[in-house]
Length: 274
Ligand code: C2E
Ligand code: CA
Ligand code: CA
Ligand code: CA
Image (cartoon, rainbow, N blue to C red):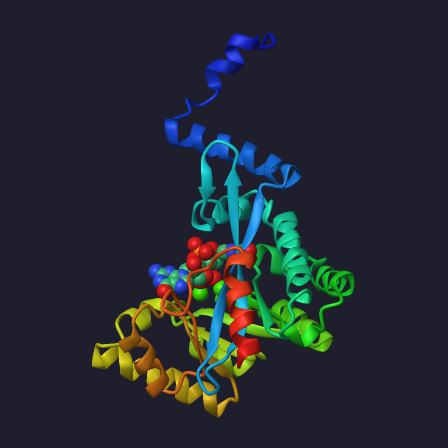
């Protein structure tokens, strides 16, 4: 057969629907966004329920798109994972979060989300070491939040988790209770903390949900694992997660996530005042 011309090639190209076009545009923007410095971190405090003090903050990435404005992570993290752009983005988040935390006058912890794609990539441990070295942040002040999907490749995951803990950093299991085999993972992997997903906190006034939370807390405390309740929005929820034995709470009631200068300035003044 004769070589197909341009027009023939076009013929075979599947028609793009609007959603695909939108996705391609976003992907292109995402590729350029890192170079343009369009990402920023917001910080959300975690309240230690025993002492009533702020024990640390979670870093949450934001994208300040030059035309679309602020894009929340829910709208681009999955795409960043599919395109593996999450690897350089995650590296930036890690370095920026460590740099910021090293400037705090209170020795609070910084929690950083690590995507499964980023976790499985061979340079992760080296990247963590390098972020710690560059910032001078003591390793015990860094906490990495991973989700259950990381743990599917059990052998590899265990090796990486042990290497990370060998550096002295802490590991938290995020969105606890939303996966398939959360309970068995607790036995097999070395976690310092579990974060009970906000879907449970939201329904904690339901006695069945409260019973599940109580069971998670019981298990965690027997295994020596700290337990954070995520998504605490009301005083009633705070009272209840405290009553169920959670060690930490995070949510809009305590503080919404925001830029360091907005969230941390008032916090540090409050903590210095005692
Ligand atoms: P996540 O790790 O479970 O983070 C908690 C999310 O819940 C954040 O949403 C936070 O703003 C929100 N939140 C906190 N308190 C409350 C509350 O009281 N009520 C409600 N309704 N929501 C609350 P955000 O910042 O939109 O992040 C969504 C998800 O995107 C995160 O869920 C995490 O999975 C992912 N993400 C965010 N930043 C990063 C990052 O730097 N790297 C990676 N890999 N993923 C990230
Ligand atoms: Ca998280
Ligand atoms: Ca979570
Ligand atoms: Ca989540």
